[in-house]
Length: 379
Image (cartoon, rainbow, N blue to C red):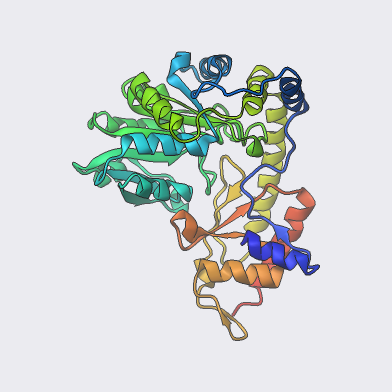
């Protein structure tokens, strides 16, 4: 979709891109200044595979300060983005034939990482009616003797769903019955939530030793291109991931690590300003989407996405064009409305599309108006 959108833009067509999975904000100035200073201070050599000790200690301090979680610095592994942290964990935990439970919708790379680990993905389908979240009963029904791992995100990409502490407790009660199952908790959107304090499944002492907490700097500090993420896990898993990473990429960029260190030492003022803007946009887009007939949408509690159900338009036509599925609808919206979105099939739900609101308020208002007018042409 991004490629097709660029091709239309190259022809002079005004395309509004709502397919982006990154904040439309700049990295904070104090973070950029730290990177410049690192260059001047000659941080140009190989770093420890797991990251600079100062950064790992800053991560541990952040987890204690903001999340009430106690980790030693040697339980932290810094990687080239949270994506690598996720892949490291899957590669170290999953053996051929192991089953990995993944609630849908899910971030597109989860299932591919599991394939690389030669595991089998077991999906649990969540719907818009339940705010795209699963229950403990659904989780327990999916568990078999082959289950090795549970993998999820909160706040979630692509739905923006956020699990409350009570909802996490419902899942934890199940995990307590199955002590051989590990949990990967992807919390990269932690700070972009509109419900107050973030709840982590690692807060539950009964299962904490089996939780691999994944986070990073890309979303909260608008540092997507810097590629710095990390995991916090028990020492055995952290050591295994350190060993694996040492044979693949070694340490993360020295300059990016110094920038990340400054981010965690610099407080949350810039983060809170960004989140306030995202909340404002969320409310605007939600109000506009609910006015479109046939579009079923919930109110996301975090991240910067909507994941509306659009199956009411499947089977409808615009001239000779028939909308058979979400991909057809995305192509129709791109060519007819000049708005770029993403098919929900990529995220495990073929009845939905993903809309990012990481765009200006004016662009968002115009984009949803275009979508509404385009959909009105289908009959």
